[in-house]
Image 1 (cartoon, rainbow, N blue to C red):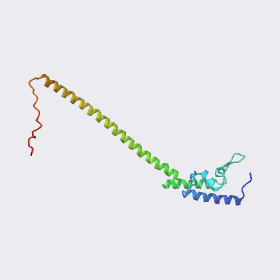
Image 2 (image 1 turned 30 degrees about the vertical axis):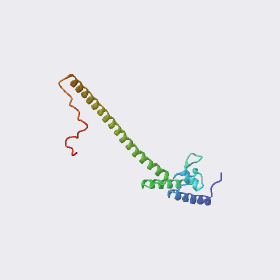
Image 3 (image 1 turned 90 degrees about the vertical axis):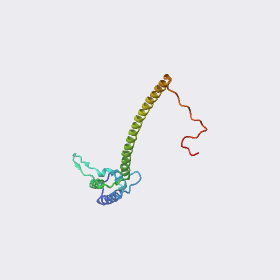
Image 4 (image 1 turned 45 degrees about the horizontal axis):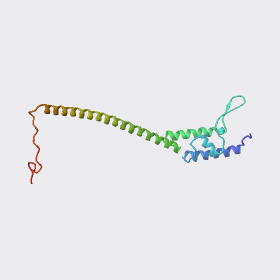
Length: 165
């Protein structure tokens, strides 16, 4: 593979800086993110230039564009720390996380209301059963005690007391 000339390297750095400004302004290509992969694709260089290389002796030397990668990552971090979200997907993720948290609270509240309603229903049914048992006992007492008489029904043709007719 041929070594980059200083002219090629300068041209590539200018393209990477242009791509960096585009990404940091939030103008991401379809399917792209605010990351080194997209930066390399927009800058027209390979990602390997952003990472350190190993010499034959085993020592590390900086990649051709490693300083730009570090600058890009620092600027993205600074924007995120300032509350600005460069990547629209990150903004969408944050929005969805907020919605999920709100929905979880609403579901928990509804679940508690259902538990409360079930307890109320059980209490109401229990009270109704007790009242029914008491009514049945009173009916049996009335039937067993012959001295209690039923009142005659009100004739249909007469008006109730206090009527104006």
